[in-house]
Length: 447
Image (tube, rainbow, N blue to C red):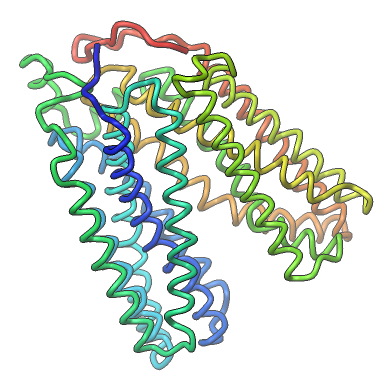
């Protein structure tokens, strides 16, 4: 089955939308976080809870994806999601300012605001991935995933830098103006990028036959979700996404404290260490994009091989962090770069695999599948930071010594990455299965 032509211009437009999404999110999860803790002297637990809450709300992703499937269009969900996200971002800024005079009422508004942020991210992000799964040709999936995610990271970096300059020196009025301007700008860019992007008459590259389309329209959400969960590949990949992202995010909040507490790094040095990790992630992403391109033609290994290998390499790199917790002479910086390369490789390979699997079971359920995996990722990120920091504190209480406590946490993460590699290997070897009369099986799949 030939997919409709979805070239690099269309992929770049999706990447720009992803950058807009990241731009709004980074202000709410980092800039407002800092203002609450530093300028307003509020407990750090408050922004931590709000970030966890916005991840918890993203459990609605499968329902959002089903809505896009049922309407057979992703564009309205992407535009609507960006608008809701923008409103949530502005209200989050208002709530932060309000906390300065009325902490309780401001906090209540912040809970509502971060719920809207979670809903907006779910609707826009899930539908964007579903559209990529439907219309990006297989040979472009790894490079396309890399391009889109790099543009999101660019959105993080550019927005954080610009907003930081615009609100310095800080004042509530400036914060509200910048937040409102950012939401309006990102909504306008999204609308322009979506104009004429999607062909609403196509599902997975072709118009579905009337009986299939009618059956898909009759299904309710529960039946559609049960149908997706009955697919062995979808179930296995859901567990893989949760396990790998849990291991990935658990290390995120403890790497810098670990370097400072155990290796004596200054705040500036720990920030540089995070920069080394992000640099490694970028290298890993580019490597998978090159391996999955038409130019490489499989000579550098399949995308699935990079997914398995990236998880195994992440496990080995985390074992290295285990060693660095016990030895002062361990090359920590080099180890962190290796961890970043492995993390970037498996994450982009997983996204490319996600797009392949989303359409493998048959047309019309891409959004529901993407939503299921997005919910698994959100749950993992919500729990990961809590698990990493809580496990570190608990291990320190039980073991009475920081080095051994951090080593125990890194050992746990290494096991999770190894388990994720085993699951990834199962996904890579699995062939598409027939799932009943409702679904139309595609005529083959590369693994």
